[in-house]
Image (cartoon, rainbow, N blue to C red; front, side):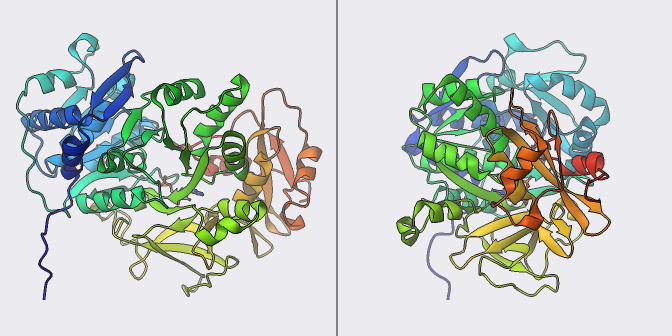
Length: 541
Ligand code: AMP
Protein backbone atom coordinates (compact mmCIF):
# COMPACT_ATOMS: atom_id res chain seq x y z
CA UNK A 1 0.00 0.00 0.00
CA UNK A 2 1.46 3.40 -1.00
CA UNK A 3 1.18 6.40 1.26
CA UNK A 4 -1.33 8.96 0.16
CA UNK A 5 0.90 12.02 0.14
CA UNK A 6 1.62 14.42 -2.72
CA UNK A 7 4.39 13.34 -5.01
CA UNK A 8 5.88 16.73 -5.85
CA UNK A 9 9.31 16.40 -7.48
CA UNK A 10 12.35 17.89 -5.71
CA UNK A 11 13.51 20.34 -8.38
CA UNK A 12 16.08 23.11 -8.40
CA UNK A 13 13.57 25.67 -9.73
CA UNK A 14 11.43 25.06 -6.63
CA UNK A 15 14.27 26.46 -4.49
CA UNK A 16 14.34 29.84 -6.22
CA UNK A 17 10.52 29.90 -6.42
CA UNK A 18 10.42 29.45 -2.65
CA UNK A 19 13.04 32.16 -2.09
CA UNK A 20 11.15 34.55 -4.37
CA UNK A 21 7.81 33.95 -2.65
CA UNK A 22 8.93 33.88 0.99
CA UNK A 23 12.22 35.81 0.99
CA UNK A 24 11.70 38.00 -2.07
CA UNK A 25 13.32 41.10 -0.55
CA UNK A 26 16.38 39.31 0.78
CA UNK A 27 19.50 40.68 -0.85
CA UNK A 28 22.07 39.08 -3.12
CA UNK A 29 25.19 41.26 -3.06
CA UNK A 30 28.05 40.83 -5.55
CA UNK A 31 31.36 42.46 -6.24
CA UNK A 32 31.17 43.26 -9.95
CA UNK A 33 33.74 41.67 -12.23
CA UNK A 34 33.82 44.71 -14.49
CA UNK A 35 35.06 47.27 -11.95
CA UNK A 36 34.95 45.80 -8.43
CA UNK A 37 31.97 47.96 -7.40
CA UNK A 38 29.05 46.49 -5.46
CA UNK A 39 25.91 45.19 -7.20
CA UNK A 40 22.69 44.55 -5.27
CA UNK A 41 19.71 42.47 -6.24
CA UNK A 42 17.10 40.30 -4.47
CA UNK A 43 15.78 36.76 -4.68
CA UNK A 44 12.68 38.18 -6.40
CA UNK A 45 14.74 39.82 -9.15
CA UNK A 46 17.09 36.87 -9.51
CA UNK A 47 14.10 34.62 -10.07
CA UNK A 48 12.57 36.97 -12.66
CA UNK A 49 15.87 37.34 -14.52
CA UNK A 50 16.59 33.57 -14.34
CA UNK A 51 13.24 32.94 -16.09
CA UNK A 52 14.10 35.47 -18.81
CA UNK A 53 17.61 34.06 -19.14
CA UNK A 54 16.06 30.61 -19.53
CA UNK A 55 13.91 31.96 -22.39
CA UNK A 56 17.05 33.43 -23.99
CA UNK A 57 18.92 30.13 -23.64
CA UNK A 58 16.06 28.34 -25.35
CA UNK A 59 16.43 30.92 -28.12
CA UNK A 60 20.06 29.81 -28.48
CA UNK A 61 18.89 26.23 -28.94
CA UNK A 62 19.27 25.00 -25.36
CA UNK A 63 16.83 22.18 -24.57
CA UNK A 64 16.40 19.62 -21.83
CA UNK A 65 19.75 17.77 -21.32
CA UNK A 66 21.79 20.35 -23.33
CA UNK A 67 25.01 21.13 -21.49
CA UNK A 68 25.72 24.81 -20.82
CA UNK A 69 29.24 25.55 -19.59
CA UNK A 70 30.25 28.37 -17.25
CA UNK A 71 33.70 29.91 -16.73
CA UNK A 72 32.85 32.34 -13.99
CA UNK A 73 33.54 33.69 -10.50
CA UNK A 74 30.99 33.84 -7.70
CA UNK A 75 28.52 36.53 -8.76
CA UNK A 76 24.83 37.19 -9.41
CA UNK A 77 24.96 36.34 -13.12
CA UNK A 78 26.54 32.95 -12.37
CA UNK A 79 23.85 32.43 -9.71
CA UNK A 80 21.13 33.27 -12.26
CA UNK A 81 22.65 30.73 -14.66
CA UNK A 82 22.51 28.01 -11.99
CA UNK A 83 18.71 28.38 -11.95
CA UNK A 84 18.04 29.31 -15.59
CA UNK A 85 19.94 26.30 -16.97
CA UNK A 86 18.80 23.60 -14.54
CA UNK A 87 15.30 25.11 -14.38
CA UNK A 88 14.56 24.15 -18.00
CA UNK A 89 16.06 20.70 -17.61
CA UNK A 90 19.41 21.60 -19.19
CA UNK A 91 22.67 20.80 -17.42
CA UNK A 92 24.77 23.54 -15.81
CA UNK A 93 28.40 22.56 -16.32
CA UNK A 94 30.64 24.63 -14.07
CA UNK A 95 34.20 24.62 -15.42
CA UNK A 96 37.25 25.32 -13.26
CA UNK A 97 39.13 28.10 -15.10
CA UNK A 98 42.30 27.31 -13.15
CA UNK A 99 42.76 24.02 -15.00
CA UNK A 100 45.20 23.93 -17.91
CA UNK A 101 43.59 25.08 -21.20
CA UNK A 102 44.13 21.59 -22.68
CA UNK A 103 42.21 20.06 -19.76
CA UNK A 104 39.41 22.61 -20.19
CA UNK A 105 39.16 21.91 -23.93
CA UNK A 106 38.98 18.20 -23.10
CA UNK A 107 36.23 18.79 -20.52
CA UNK A 108 34.18 21.06 -22.82
CA UNK A 109 34.41 18.44 -25.58
CA UNK A 110 33.65 15.53 -23.25
CA UNK A 111 30.65 17.34 -21.76
CA UNK A 112 29.55 18.39 -25.25
CA UNK A 113 28.87 21.95 -24.11
CA UNK A 114 26.74 23.81 -26.67
CA UNK A 115 26.91 27.21 -24.99
CA UNK A 116 29.65 28.57 -22.72
CA UNK A 117 29.05 31.66 -20.56
CA UNK A 118 32.14 33.42 -19.22
CA UNK A 119 33.19 36.35 -17.05
CA UNK A 120 35.30 39.01 -18.78
CA UNK A 121 38.40 37.92 -16.83
CA UNK A 122 38.38 34.76 -18.90
CA UNK A 123 38.17 36.30 -22.40
CA UNK A 124 41.87 35.56 -23.16
CA UNK A 125 41.28 31.95 -22.05
CA UNK A 126 38.12 31.69 -24.18
CA UNK A 127 39.94 33.04 -27.25
CA UNK A 128 42.61 30.39 -26.73
CA UNK A 129 40.02 27.64 -26.17
CA UNK A 130 37.58 28.42 -28.99
CA UNK A 131 39.59 26.85 -31.87
CA UNK A 132 39.84 23.64 -29.79
CA UNK A 133 36.12 23.58 -28.90
CA UNK A 134 34.37 23.20 -32.26
CA UNK A 135 31.17 21.92 -30.62
CA UNK A 136 30.46 25.18 -28.80
CA UNK A 137 27.85 27.13 -30.78
CA UNK A 138 27.68 30.25 -28.61
CA UNK A 139 30.17 32.03 -26.35
CA UNK A 140 28.29 34.38 -24.02
CA UNK A 141 30.14 37.25 -22.30
CA UNK A 142 28.58 37.74 -18.84
CA UNK A 143 28.34 41.53 -19.00
CA UNK A 144 26.31 44.39 -20.45
CA UNK A 145 26.59 46.17 -23.80
CA UNK A 146 28.75 48.99 -22.39
CA UNK A 147 31.43 46.50 -21.25
CA UNK A 148 31.42 44.19 -24.25
CA UNK A 149 35.04 43.55 -25.22
CA UNK A 150 36.48 43.69 -28.72
CA UNK A 151 37.18 40.16 -29.90
CA UNK A 152 37.70 38.28 -33.13
CA UNK A 153 35.20 35.71 -31.77
CA UNK A 154 31.49 36.29 -32.41
CA UNK A 155 30.31 36.85 -28.81
CA UNK A 156 26.82 37.03 -27.35
CA UNK A 157 26.12 39.63 -24.65
CA UNK A 158 24.46 38.27 -21.48
CA UNK A 159 22.43 41.41 -20.71
CA UNK A 160 21.31 41.82 -24.34
CA UNK A 161 20.00 38.26 -24.24
CA UNK A 162 17.95 39.00 -21.13
CA UNK A 163 16.74 42.35 -22.53
CA UNK A 164 15.53 40.60 -25.67
CA UNK A 165 13.32 38.32 -23.58
CA UNK A 166 10.94 40.37 -21.46
CA UNK A 167 8.78 37.29 -20.83
CA UNK A 168 10.35 34.60 -18.72
CA UNK A 169 9.63 30.90 -19.07
CA UNK A 170 7.25 28.98 -16.83
CA UNK A 171 9.43 26.30 -15.29
CA UNK A 172 8.59 22.98 -16.95
CA UNK A 173 7.63 19.93 -14.90
CA UNK A 174 10.74 17.77 -14.55
CA UNK A 175 11.50 14.31 -13.30
CA UNK A 176 13.47 14.88 -10.09
CA UNK A 177 15.95 12.23 -11.21
CA UNK A 178 16.89 14.16 -14.34
CA UNK A 179 20.39 15.61 -14.63
CA UNK A 180 20.81 19.17 -13.36
CA UNK A 181 24.50 19.98 -13.24
CA UNK A 182 27.90 18.60 -14.04
CA UNK A 183 31.25 19.05 -12.33
CA UNK A 184 34.53 17.39 -13.30
CA UNK A 185 36.87 16.09 -10.61
CA UNK A 186 40.05 18.08 -10.30
CA UNK A 187 41.93 14.79 -10.91
CA UNK A 188 45.67 15.08 -10.31
CA UNK A 189 46.27 12.10 -12.59
CA UNK A 190 44.55 11.07 -15.82
CA UNK A 191 41.68 12.94 -17.44
CA UNK A 192 39.10 14.59 -15.19
CA UNK A 193 35.86 12.60 -14.77
CA UNK A 194 32.39 14.16 -14.79
CA UNK A 195 30.04 13.90 -11.81
CA UNK A 196 26.46 14.38 -12.99
CA UNK A 197 24.15 15.63 -10.24
CA UNK A 198 20.36 15.31 -10.37
CA UNK A 199 17.64 17.69 -9.16
CA UNK A 200 16.79 15.23 -6.41
CA UNK A 201 20.38 14.75 -5.22
CA UNK A 202 20.95 18.50 -5.24
CA UNK A 203 17.82 19.39 -3.27
CA UNK A 204 18.36 16.61 -0.71
CA UNK A 205 21.97 17.74 -0.28
CA UNK A 206 20.84 21.36 0.12
CA UNK A 207 18.38 20.27 2.86
CA UNK A 208 21.04 18.26 4.67
CA UNK A 209 23.59 21.06 4.49
CA UNK A 210 21.28 23.50 6.34
CA UNK A 211 20.87 21.30 9.43
CA UNK A 212 22.10 22.78 12.73
CA UNK A 213 24.83 20.14 13.06
CA UNK A 214 25.86 20.70 9.43
CA UNK A 215 26.31 24.27 8.17
CA UNK A 216 23.55 25.61 10.44
CA UNK A 217 22.00 28.03 7.93
CA UNK A 218 18.90 30.14 8.47
CA UNK A 219 17.03 33.22 7.25
CA UNK A 220 19.07 35.20 9.80
CA UNK A 221 22.36 34.40 8.10
CA UNK A 222 24.47 36.32 5.64
CA UNK A 223 26.50 33.79 3.69
CA UNK A 224 29.65 34.55 1.75
CA UNK A 225 30.92 31.52 -0.19
CA UNK A 226 34.63 32.04 -0.84
CA UNK A 227 34.70 28.52 -2.26
CA UNK A 228 34.15 29.04 -5.99
CA UNK A 229 30.91 28.16 -7.74
CA UNK A 230 33.09 26.02 -10.04
CA UNK A 231 34.30 23.90 -7.07
CA UNK A 232 31.45 21.43 -6.45
CA UNK A 233 28.79 24.15 -6.78
CA UNK A 234 30.37 26.22 -4.01
CA UNK A 235 29.66 23.28 -1.70
CA UNK A 236 25.94 23.63 -2.44
CA UNK A 237 25.58 27.07 -0.84
CA UNK A 238 23.84 28.61 -3.90
CA UNK A 239 21.09 26.02 -3.30
CA UNK A 240 21.06 25.97 0.51
CA UNK A 241 20.89 29.76 0.92
CA UNK A 242 17.62 30.16 -1.09
CA UNK A 243 16.20 27.10 0.69
CA UNK A 244 16.38 28.94 4.03
CA UNK A 245 16.26 32.51 2.67
CA UNK A 246 19.74 33.54 3.78
CA UNK A 247 21.30 36.67 2.28
CA UNK A 248 24.12 35.82 -0.13
CA UNK A 249 27.30 37.80 -0.72
CA UNK A 250 29.44 36.94 -3.76
CA UNK A 251 33.07 38.13 -3.76
CA UNK A 252 33.66 38.05 -7.53
CA UNK A 253 37.32 37.85 -8.48
CA UNK A 254 38.73 39.59 -5.37
CA UNK A 255 39.73 36.73 -3.07
CA UNK A 256 42.65 38.40 -1.25
CA UNK A 257 42.39 38.89 2.52
CA UNK A 258 41.82 42.65 2.40
CA UNK A 259 38.98 42.50 -0.16
CA UNK A 260 37.26 39.66 1.67
CA UNK A 261 37.43 41.31 5.09
CA UNK A 262 36.06 44.54 3.62
CA UNK A 263 33.06 42.64 2.23
CA UNK A 264 32.58 40.64 5.46
CA UNK A 265 32.35 43.85 7.45
CA UNK A 266 30.30 45.94 4.98
CA UNK A 267 27.63 43.24 4.53
CA UNK A 268 27.55 41.76 8.03
CA UNK A 269 28.60 38.28 6.90
CA UNK A 270 27.78 35.62 9.53
CA UNK A 271 28.87 32.46 7.69
CA UNK A 272 31.60 31.78 5.19
CA UNK A 273 33.20 28.75 3.56
CA UNK A 274 36.48 27.98 1.85
CA UNK A 275 39.64 25.87 1.63
CA UNK A 276 42.43 26.33 4.21
CA UNK A 277 44.74 28.23 1.79
CA UNK A 278 42.21 31.05 1.40
CA UNK A 279 42.03 31.53 5.17
CA UNK A 280 45.82 31.72 5.43
CA UNK A 281 45.75 34.99 3.46
CA UNK A 282 42.74 36.32 5.32
CA UNK A 283 44.11 35.58 8.80
CA UNK A 284 47.50 37.08 7.89
CA UNK A 285 45.72 40.28 6.86
CA UNK A 286 43.60 40.37 10.04
CA UNK A 287 46.68 39.97 12.20
CA UNK A 288 48.83 42.48 10.32
CA UNK A 289 46.10 45.13 10.49
CA UNK A 290 44.94 44.28 14.03
CA UNK A 291 41.34 43.74 12.83
CA UNK A 292 38.38 41.95 14.44
CA UNK A 293 35.36 40.32 12.81
CA UNK A 294 32.14 42.26 13.40
CA UNK A 295 29.46 39.69 12.59
CA UNK A 296 31.21 36.49 11.50
CA UNK A 297 29.95 33.60 13.65
CA UNK A 298 31.26 30.54 11.85
CA UNK A 299 33.23 29.42 8.87
CA UNK A 300 33.27 26.13 7.04
CA UNK A 301 36.77 24.87 6.27
CA UNK A 302 37.32 21.82 4.09
CA UNK A 303 38.64 20.61 0.77
CA UNK A 304 41.87 19.65 2.51
CA UNK A 305 42.70 19.05 6.14
CA UNK A 306 42.28 22.17 8.24
CA UNK A 307 45.42 22.55 10.37
CA UNK A 308 44.52 22.52 14.09
CA UNK A 309 46.51 25.74 14.48
CA UNK A 310 44.05 27.46 12.11
CA UNK A 311 41.04 26.14 14.07
CA UNK A 312 42.57 27.49 17.29
CA UNK A 313 43.30 30.91 15.78
CA UNK A 314 39.74 31.32 14.51
CA UNK A 315 38.10 30.07 17.69
CA UNK A 316 40.42 31.24 20.48
CA UNK A 317 41.70 34.53 18.99
CA UNK A 318 38.68 35.66 16.98
CA UNK A 319 35.68 33.87 18.54
CA UNK A 320 34.66 32.38 15.19
CA UNK A 321 33.43 28.76 15.19
CA UNK A 322 35.21 26.53 12.70
CA UNK A 323 33.08 23.89 11.01
CA UNK A 324 35.73 21.46 9.84
CA UNK A 325 34.08 19.57 6.99
CA UNK A 326 35.03 16.80 4.63
CA UNK A 327 33.60 15.82 1.29
CA UNK A 328 34.35 15.40 -2.36
CA UNK A 329 33.06 16.29 -5.83
CA UNK A 330 31.50 12.83 -6.00
CA UNK A 331 29.52 13.61 -2.80
CA UNK A 332 27.92 16.93 -3.85
CA UNK A 333 30.22 17.46 -1.71
CA UNK A 334 29.20 17.20 1.96
CA UNK A 335 30.04 14.02 3.88
CA UNK A 336 30.95 15.04 7.43
CA UNK A 337 30.93 18.19 9.53
CA UNK A 338 32.57 18.56 12.92
CA UNK A 339 30.17 19.69 15.64
CA UNK A 340 30.05 18.47 19.22
CA UNK A 341 27.50 16.18 20.77
CA UNK A 342 25.89 17.29 24.02
CA UNK A 343 28.01 14.96 26.15
CA UNK A 344 31.25 16.26 24.63
CA UNK A 345 30.59 19.83 25.77
CA UNK A 346 31.49 18.81 29.31
CA UNK A 347 34.98 17.62 28.28
CA UNK A 348 38.02 19.75 29.07
CA UNK A 349 39.50 21.94 26.36
CA UNK A 350 42.31 19.56 25.41
CA UNK A 351 39.84 16.72 24.84
CA UNK A 352 37.47 18.95 22.89
CA UNK A 353 40.31 20.29 20.73
CA UNK A 354 41.34 16.72 19.90
CA UNK A 355 37.81 15.93 18.72
CA UNK A 356 37.65 19.12 16.68
CA UNK A 357 40.80 18.25 14.75
CA UNK A 358 38.89 15.36 13.16
CA UNK A 359 36.87 15.80 9.95
CA UNK A 360 33.57 15.33 11.79
CA UNK A 361 30.60 12.99 11.71
CA UNK A 362 28.25 12.12 8.83
CA UNK A 363 25.12 14.14 8.32
CA UNK A 364 21.93 12.16 7.68
CA UNK A 365 22.06 11.05 4.05
CA UNK A 366 25.66 9.84 4.22
CA UNK A 367 26.63 6.42 5.53
CA UNK A 368 30.28 5.39 5.85
CA UNK A 369 32.53 2.50 6.82
CA UNK A 370 36.23 1.68 6.74
CA UNK A 371 37.59 -1.55 5.31
CA UNK A 372 40.95 -3.33 5.24
CA UNK A 373 42.84 -4.62 2.20
CA UNK A 374 40.63 -7.75 2.19
CA UNK A 375 37.47 -5.62 2.03
CA UNK A 376 36.37 -6.65 5.55
CA UNK A 377 34.92 -3.89 7.69
CA UNK A 378 37.25 -2.53 10.40
CA UNK A 379 36.20 -1.56 13.93
CA UNK A 380 34.82 1.90 14.69
CA UNK A 381 37.27 2.45 17.53
CA UNK A 382 39.13 5.60 16.48
CA UNK A 383 42.32 3.51 16.13
CA UNK A 384 41.97 1.15 13.16
CA UNK A 385 42.33 2.89 9.84
CA UNK A 386 41.41 1.71 6.36
CA UNK A 387 39.83 2.67 3.05
CA UNK A 388 36.84 4.92 3.57
CA UNK A 389 33.67 3.89 1.69
CA UNK A 390 30.46 5.93 1.51
CA UNK A 391 26.92 5.66 0.20
CA UNK A 392 23.87 7.88 0.08
CA UNK A 393 21.36 9.63 -2.19
CA UNK A 394 23.73 12.49 -3.13
CA UNK A 395 26.77 10.28 -3.80
CA UNK A 396 27.95 9.44 -7.32
CA UNK A 397 26.93 5.99 -8.61
CA UNK A 398 28.75 6.28 -11.94
CA UNK A 399 30.81 8.90 -13.79
CA UNK A 400 29.46 10.78 -16.82
CA UNK A 401 29.49 8.58 -19.93
CA UNK A 402 30.60 5.63 -17.79
CA UNK A 403 34.18 6.92 -17.71
CA UNK A 404 36.50 4.67 -15.68
CA UNK A 405 33.95 1.82 -15.45
CA UNK A 406 31.80 1.00 -12.41
CA UNK A 407 33.32 2.87 -9.46
CA UNK A 408 31.28 1.11 -6.76
CA UNK A 409 32.31 -1.75 -4.48
CA UNK A 410 29.22 -3.70 -3.38
CA UNK A 411 27.12 -0.56 -3.64
CA UNK A 412 29.62 1.62 -1.76
CA UNK A 413 31.72 4.41 -3.26
CA UNK A 414 35.45 4.16 -2.44
CA UNK A 415 36.61 7.68 -1.57
CA UNK A 416 40.35 7.08 -2.04
CA UNK A 417 40.84 8.39 1.50
CA UNK A 418 42.26 6.42 4.41
CA UNK A 419 40.51 7.17 7.69
CA UNK A 420 39.55 6.16 11.22
CA UNK A 421 35.99 6.15 12.58
CA UNK A 422 35.30 6.36 16.31
CA UNK A 423 32.40 5.07 18.38
CA UNK A 424 30.72 8.50 18.27
CA UNK A 425 30.84 8.47 14.46
CA UNK A 426 33.68 10.99 14.14
CA UNK A 427 35.85 10.35 11.11
CA UNK A 428 39.47 11.38 10.81
CA UNK A 429 41.34 11.35 7.53
CA UNK A 430 44.77 9.76 7.90
CA UNK A 431 45.67 10.56 4.33
CA UNK A 432 44.74 10.32 0.70
CA UNK A 433 45.59 6.64 0.01
CA UNK A 434 48.17 7.78 -2.56
CA UNK A 435 49.85 10.17 -0.10
CA UNK A 436 50.23 7.97 2.95
CA UNK A 437 53.91 7.22 3.67
CA UNK A 438 54.69 3.53 3.91
CA UNK A 439 57.66 3.12 6.22
CA UNK A 440 58.82 -0.37 7.21
CA UNK A 441 55.35 -1.84 6.70
CA UNK A 442 53.71 0.84 8.89
CA UNK A 443 51.87 3.94 7.75
CA UNK A 444 52.78 7.54 8.50
CA UNK A 445 50.14 10.22 8.00
CA UNK A 446 51.45 13.10 5.90
CA UNK A 447 48.50 15.21 7.13
CA UNK A 448 49.49 14.78 10.80
CA UNK A 449 53.06 15.84 10.06
CA UNK A 450 51.91 18.86 8.02
CA UNK A 451 49.51 19.92 10.77
CA UNK A 452 52.32 19.72 13.30
CA UNK A 453 54.72 21.73 11.13
CA UNK A 454 52.27 24.60 10.49
CA UNK A 455 51.70 24.94 14.23
CA UNK A 456 55.25 26.44 14.38
CA UNK A 457 54.93 30.24 14.43
CA UNK A 458 57.52 30.66 11.64
CA UNK A 459 55.82 28.28 9.19
CA UNK A 460 53.42 29.61 6.55
CA UNK A 461 52.72 26.32 4.79
CA UNK A 462 54.10 22.78 4.84
CA UNK A 463 53.90 19.59 2.79
CA UNK A 464 55.15 16.09 3.52
CA UNK A 465 55.83 13.42 0.90
CA UNK A 466 57.27 9.93 1.03
CA UNK A 467 60.76 9.58 -0.45
CA UNK A 468 62.37 6.26 -1.39
CA UNK A 469 64.60 4.81 1.34
CA UNK A 470 66.80 1.70 0.95
CA UNK A 471 65.90 0.26 4.35
CA UNK A 472 62.39 1.54 5.14
CA UNK A 473 60.88 1.73 1.61
CA UNK A 474 59.77 5.29 2.21
CA UNK A 475 60.56 8.02 4.69
CA UNK A 476 58.92 11.43 5.17
CA UNK A 477 60.47 14.54 3.60
CA UNK A 478 59.16 17.86 4.90
CA UNK A 479 58.90 20.90 2.62
CA UNK A 480 58.38 24.20 4.38
CA UNK A 481 57.47 27.73 3.29
CA UNK A 482 58.69 30.13 6.00
CA UNK A 483 56.63 33.18 6.98
CA UNK A 484 58.05 36.43 5.58
CA UNK A 485 61.14 37.48 7.54
CA UNK A 486 61.36 34.18 9.51
CA UNK A 487 64.76 32.49 9.87
CA UNK A 488 63.66 29.03 11.04
CA UNK A 489 66.32 26.34 10.32
CA UNK A 490 66.29 22.57 9.84
CA UNK A 491 67.28 21.57 13.39
CA UNK A 492 64.79 23.88 15.07
CA UNK A 493 62.03 22.61 12.76
CA UNK A 494 62.80 18.97 13.55
CA UNK A 495 63.08 19.65 17.28
CA UNK A 496 59.56 21.11 17.16
CA UNK A 497 58.17 17.66 16.29
CA UNK A 498 59.60 16.01 19.40
CA UNK A 499 56.90 14.94 21.82
CA UNK A 500 54.20 15.80 19.29
CA UNK A 501 54.45 12.75 17.02
CA UNK A 502 55.88 9.24 17.42
CA UNK A 503 59.68 9.29 17.17
CA UNK A 504 59.75 7.09 14.08
CA UNK A 505 57.43 9.56 12.31
CA UNK A 506 60.02 12.39 12.45
CA UNK A 507 60.79 13.66 8.93
CA UNK A 508 64.20 12.51 7.69
CA UNK A 509 64.96 15.88 6.13
CA UNK A 510 63.59 19.39 5.71
CA UNK A 511 63.69 21.49 2.55
CA UNK A 512 62.84 25.20 2.69
CA UNK A 513 61.05 26.42 -0.46
CA UNK A 514 59.59 29.76 -1.59
CA UNK A 515 56.20 28.32 -2.50
CA UNK A 516 54.34 25.00 -2.77
CA UNK A 517 52.36 23.93 -5.85
CA UNK A 518 48.55 23.73 -5.57
CA UNK A 519 45.83 22.09 -7.63
CA UNK A 520 43.11 24.08 -9.39
CA UNK A 521 41.00 23.79 -6.22
CA UNK A 522 43.72 24.90 -3.81
CA UNK A 523 44.97 21.54 -2.55
CA UNK A 524 48.68 20.70 -2.23
CA UNK A 525 49.73 19.20 -5.55
CA UNK A 526 51.61 16.19 -4.22
CA UNK A 527 52.09 14.58 -7.63
CA UNK A 528 54.25 17.58 -8.61
CA UNK A 529 56.13 17.47 -5.30
CA UNK A 530 56.83 13.77 -5.80
CA UNK A 531 58.07 14.52 -9.32
CA UNK A 532 60.38 17.26 -8.06
CA UNK A 533 61.53 15.80 -4.74
CA UNK A 534 60.71 12.06 -4.96
CA UNK A 535 64.40 11.28 -5.49
CA UNK A 536 65.68 13.61 -2.78
CA UNK A 537 68.82 12.13 -1.23
CA UNK A 538 67.90 11.67 2.42
CA UNK A 539 70.76 12.03 4.92
CA UNK A 540 69.53 8.79 6.55
CA UNK A 541 69.65 6.74 3.31
P1 AMP B 1 37.50 17.28 -4.38
O1 AMP B 1 36.62 16.31 -5.05
O2 AMP B 1 38.40 18.00 -5.34
O3 AMP B 1 36.75 18.22 -3.52
O4 AMP B 1 38.48 16.46 -3.44
C1 AMP B 1 38.01 15.59 -2.45
C2 AMP B 1 39.14 15.15 -1.57
O5 AMP B 1 39.67 16.26 -0.84
C3 AMP B 1 38.75 14.17 -0.50
O6 AMP B 1 38.65 12.86 -0.99
C4 AMP B 1 39.88 14.34 0.50
O7 AMP B 1 41.04 13.63 0.13
C5 AMP B 1 40.17 15.82 0.42
N1 AMP B 1 39.49 16.54 1.50
C6 AMP B 1 38.34 17.22 1.44
N2 AMP B 1 38.05 17.76 2.65
C7 AMP B 1 39.02 17.38 3.49
C8 AMP B 1 39.29 17.59 4.90
N3 AMP B 1 38.50 18.32 5.67
N4 AMP B 1 40.40 17.01 5.41
C9 AMP B 1 41.22 16.26 4.66
N5 AMP B 1 41.03 16.04 3.35
C10 AMP B 1 39.94 16.59 2.77
